[in-house]
Image (cartoon, rainbow, N blue to C red):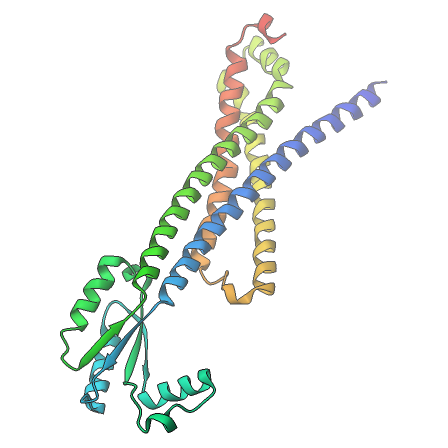
Length: 291
């Protein structure tokens, strides 16, 4: 009889531990996935910004020395991500490939101009910054024109700001939900031991002595749930990187490690603080209120 009851209690305890670990694992996995999405969405946004090219056209009077000197100066500029020189012959060939017909045979001469395509660093792809760069470049008398998509620059920044705001709101909401879910699971676990807590208190055990084993157990369960969440996130990253290598999802290893550290930190801190207050609540209740 006693053996059956002990087995029942053991199964009940294991089930309680499993539900707590599962809750912590699922919540932390979702938070970690959101964190990885945030750091990679910023990277994708920056990559998109840096694909916007500013094309600088030169007058026909600009010789090779002037063109090479300009390229050297731009390479040293703090805003330049990359530059590429496009000669008017190369530009004519590109137009011919696009049109499918050699337009030079009709015109008799090449009307195109030598140019540089400048890809600006993401931090400088702002309306005011790009306008300042254009203004400085136009001081060069050998430059005939500067062309870039001004509307696209404005649209990209406006949309990125809106998306970033919503990501922050969703992140805050999910973090709040995560704390509530983990807290609820741990409070239920402590609730099932409320009589043990009160019995220990009645025989003279101090509050800190009673709290310690419950807090330590919750922290261990939280660490286990966090470790499982990190393993699942590693599996998710490996899967995405194997199937979509162009995303470069594993390039920012430091940020990925920081996300993992945050997940583990949540897995330790939330169970600790939740168990502390849940245990304290039952310690402060009268014996009659336990029922």
